[in-house]
Image (cartoon, rainbow, N blue to C red; front, side, top):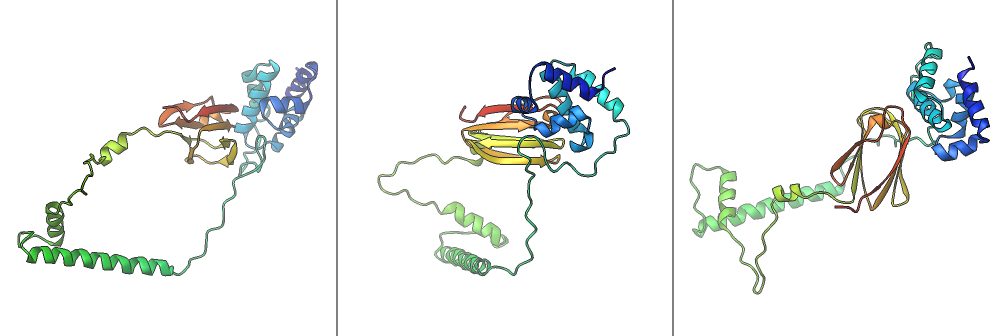
Length: 260
């Protein structure tokens, strides 16, 4: 039986395609396609990405993707599992950079100023309550604590509307919570996956991200490229789109965020 890598190379050359031609169409870097044809699995990294690349490459060439993955599993049964994800993934090769944790700093002078202002405001509120009680405007039970006294005072003091101003109902928190978000896309990862997200043409997220990652984006249009579609779920404008493919699938999808 012909080796797996040789079968891929022969199928590609039979179609008169170069590695660059294939890479441009399926969005997998040519260096990884060459690694598949050479069966140089260590150049790709984790087996989950190798299987995804093999499946996508095989489907493009008209080969049986599941059979190709099975042959890889048999040939790489003793392949050592990497202790860390590859530094580069599909098209772009950038990993997320985390800034070092800042050293502990002394409290900012603004923090002291904010505390002082809060004390002044609390004092002003207590003084006004005392003045209202002294004038007979608020009668609170003697057994009630400071919190109950403040609540009773605020309940009895109702501001008068300005002349000529019409009364408008105030939106309650419950009503605001039921409003459906718009121009919003949320991505949730249940498995490690490479991601690239463009919002309104701007590259806002790219790299290899761990399970539990949740990111929300705002704009008019979003383009998403996923290296492991079975481990990524997408919500658009508060509505779940679900997962965009199976484990190891490389998927690219475009979403309009301006809909209702």
